[in-house]
Length: 208
Image (cartoon, rainbow, N blue to C red; front, side, top):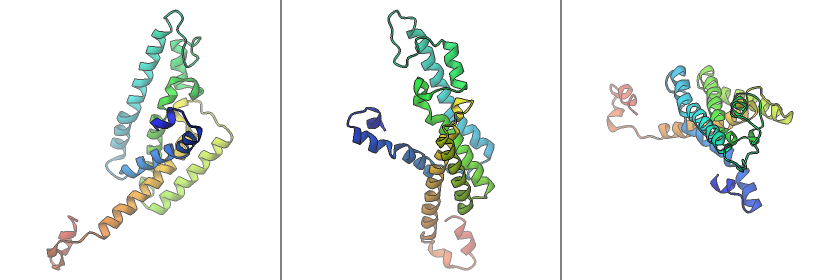
């Protein structure tokens, strides 16, 4: 990801951009346990881990920008000479071109948050059934590609449904691989020797 954002050889950058964000969300899905804990605690935890840093960085960079623009002769790299601090804050919460904002660098944080919520909802609603979760996740991804084809722009910038709907699908694939790997590990795990005793068999498997 660092190499891709540094520019350089065009074919290398194109190659990296072909998979780096899908891989990022795939790994997120693989490392996340969507069935653990209560839903409210899941939402609060992800809000603190993802949206709080996003808003902190957003306000920080907007404040730095506002200060820099008071320096005579300063040229903003984002073309914001005529955008006030208040206008910039409104861009954060309303419709706007992500690539005209320094906040665009952090687009993946709210995208990850809402993608995690969608997949958590699907896992809970389908009671962890992998086939059903994959089916509904695929349907949501198709909707995302449709919104992408018509260049749909949300009223609130951070919602980004096109990217969220597609990202949750990549997370779903990672989650499915996680479930398969853990299932194979569980099935292939050798039980302790005392587990062969009929009276202790159920008790032994409670700890495997």
